[in-house]
Image (cartoon, rainbow, N blue to C red):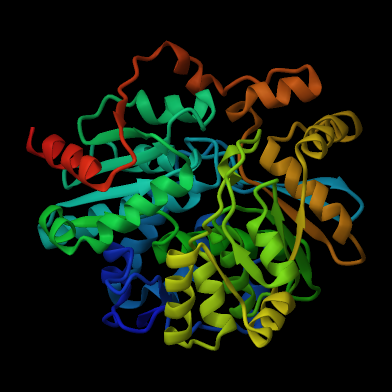
Length: 462
């Protein structure tokens, strides 16, 4: 299996190097040169299997010979052993033909755990085998950072630095990043919003001197391994509802587009997905682009769904690469225009392709709160604001085909918003009961590349 950059100018890599590299040296994102397709019988055979077995069968063709099959199976088993539900990603019925896929039973109560726990296992195996050490940097709007720190803390061959927007994540999200005591993990509170943090991470990858000096690696959803691990739960959910014998639809609350792009990969692998619906909050650049063809960055407005407070959606570049039929030069031109002018116009042909692939919807703050309250009253289900956005958008796309809405985080990660909507304050699981009693370690840093790199250099040297 070979991986190419969306911009067409970086070296072609195998899976292991793709995973360890993260962002391509031409600034693009790695995608598989070809997507393996499963037969009807192979998909049908997944029904009822343990989650770990489905994960092995789905990911194995992409991993190829990077890891021996027995070793890879053991990594998968270790990755999900700490999840709080035997099904790993259980389905709950909300109403006629509408289901909720609970993705918050991992150690940090968010869907990012599905990928990050596995990446931690793969990184550790690869680095020990190579005798290498890397510096992982990531940007987070809340959940990626805590999942990365949880997955990599205490590992000998990895230093982890997570940038998060100061004052723009929930208290639970912040404390999950700032309370681990292991010396190899660091939370950096950046002045600004998530897009600033994400831009500085990309700047570090494009500073080749710094990148090579510290052995930079990335675990944001720019890393294809992250997206790959998320493909699995589309298969477990769909086969539980009758696929491949009937189609299934999915609605995905998303800001950085990685989770829904994983759904499109599942569709390209042969899973009969009828609709893939993008659900956005008031920071609705994805919905605006799919509606108008104009991708124009606006101001980020803080919301009660902070993980979606994004205007520059990194993984949308992968969708554009497919919509432009793999034309790396065209994608490079769009990304350069975005950097210079703050936006671009999608060509008519590419826009038609995107609209044939994705539907979309937008939810206001009031509608989000109303959905949290309404579903609690009607179904007894307590939703986090992101899941509430998903189910509200999904309502506009319900029909004869089963609809699965992704519940991307536990409501206890956003207790203030949930309590304001329902009067109920969701409790953290017992294993996290002392989260607000633990000491925090926070490093404040300016929204400045040189300042951030200096902090990383000084910390690594200490």
